[in-house]
Length: 495
Ligand SMILES: [Cu+2]
Image (cartoon, rainbow, N blue to C red; front, side, top):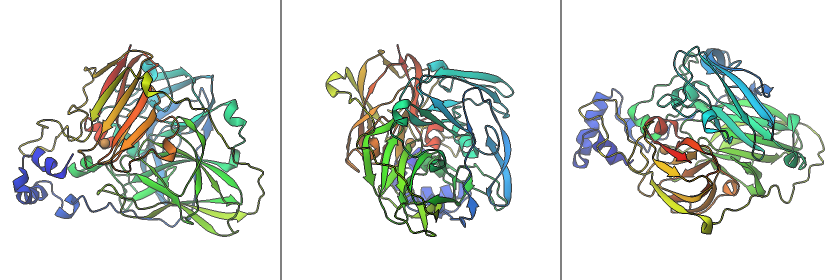
């Protein structure tokens, strides 16, 4: 929503913005500077002296237990976080297409939670809909057949109004689907394939993770100053002079990363949310929004021994609340000469383009407006509906969109009136991006394959095409987790 609408929503007319702001700064107990959305949240870089932590790899049958853990996000400063097994985050699942997976899950938290398998096509009853909660102390066994192309998926909680907190505190993990077709490409694997979950954290001086969004942080998304990879701030990884595969998840609540190499060199995008792209795409930067994944090949073969290359986020434009800085994320130290027989494949995957002529219906979703009469007047901080879809906020009981099974539809996410980025995520299906007008104005290299999350920047209208093949009740929502928890989520039912 717009800044002026935000103030109006709080009960101040646009004509009284200045008065409104001074009142706000008093009643919200923080200073005016933080109300200025043109001020980018700070990013503090660490020393890059801690070894990158690679999560344990597991497969079907391994139990997950959401619980409080101790982990040192900052070296030498352990603090309380949440995790699914040992330490922060969860292990990496690696499973074969066609296999049936069973994951016994126990909720060891003091509040409800569940697991959503983001990027896995699972039955509605296994999808982790906000209706499907596992209460504290209770267990639930997730089981589903892996019936999709090889991809990089992830898993995280989905309790309405608590997703942001639980993910920020550390509940997230990677889920890799493999297939014989992908194996035949001989992509870098083993030690040459790195799972990377990038998140930002807000930490107190003693290393405690803080999740305390203010009203304006609900507006723009909660962003921390400390960027982490696999739960550790400013790590380094020794690499050899060869090709590496980086599977990257943006597991942040609200922060986007304009991924690039500090050398300025190009890297290759081979996949995104739903698996491999049709063909490799060479880029020098890639803007990855919360929920999206990037499957990259980075070539260190021409990098001198003992030199350092950083994975960093370049500054970017299009939004006021972030993107003003370039900051480093992960250091690669090239410390070993190795030859590598890898040949970049000319093609990677067959992605059958859904035809717009096959679409039975077009649905338009306005994602740039607040709810009519959004609450919170009279000084109450308990607002809802600053972020909506078609003016509506989430209701578990209401089915917002009814869809015929196996029908193909065009969905249009219209952010032309908005001034915040919204990464829109559909459960229960992949989709293809067919156009983007306004803003960046084109389909980006990593959007040429199957997607489950697509970024609509302010001013943009993004059209996607979807074939709904799975019956049941699913949600679609903004993956800025503060926006989602604020109500920017609707139900669709396929039958
Ligand atoms: Cu959003």
